[in-house]
Length: 367
Image 1 (cartoon, rainbow, N blue to C red):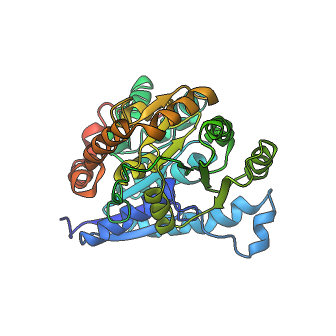
Image 2: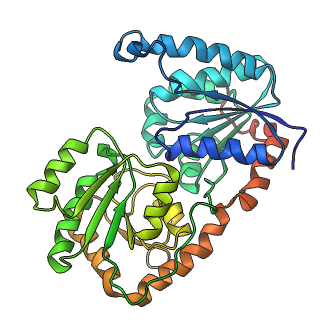
């Protein structure tokens, strides 16, 4: 417990409920349960007035000005500023100002960076990103994959894993006497997550398992194209697009599903896979980015190459009827996921808060 600590958390709020917004909300709640005084600065508050959201040229200003004012007040009233950071414009508009304001107000700044596209972002924007990153006291990342990425750019990063909510995500009773026919994908409907490959793989699976179903939980820009793809493949009745679900709905769907499929092209440490492990639901995933640091092929998941529907379908079909394989993945997954629970992550986090400047000797020098 650190109930004398004051922490400012800077990050997005749901919706969507998963990803960085979900981790931000969860971190806030867990710290408050420990008696930490938390001040929260959201990075994605609704535009006011609402019509501003349609004005591409000026809407960033309407969000940025009040955001900076909140940041300034928050940084003056906390001991630690914990900044949830990502690549691209999110870094430049939200993370970078938070780091600089935190340093200006002489507060401890912890940058909690996440995102599977870190390598390209750090390479392309190094001249802008590195001088700002150098002003952070600690850089924390959720996986060894990202730790290695930052090391290649001369930045020491500390591994602070994502936290799985075991109260929500827990296993149902195993069903060894039934075929595993209920498939699920829980990713946003964006090109980088390649849901189309999962649908192509499912079409192959259906030829062998006519009663198989696929539920796609998420929303995004590719939804219409994916709905057309499923219809064109004759799968309209067996592929359900559930849309954006809240955390309880995602947890229930994960428990009810027989196999969680992750077809992403770029990834780091997806919460959907942690939640599948915690729910005792076997996983078939592409072997990209940091996935192999989260799950192990044939031990806690089946891994396949990206953008390869036949390989993904073959892995799914292995799990459909193989009770022994499914039971092994389930048991090892439930065991391994314990390292991502709050009791096991808490002391790592508090250690970073207690000794924030330990890594500054190896951080890149500010320009």
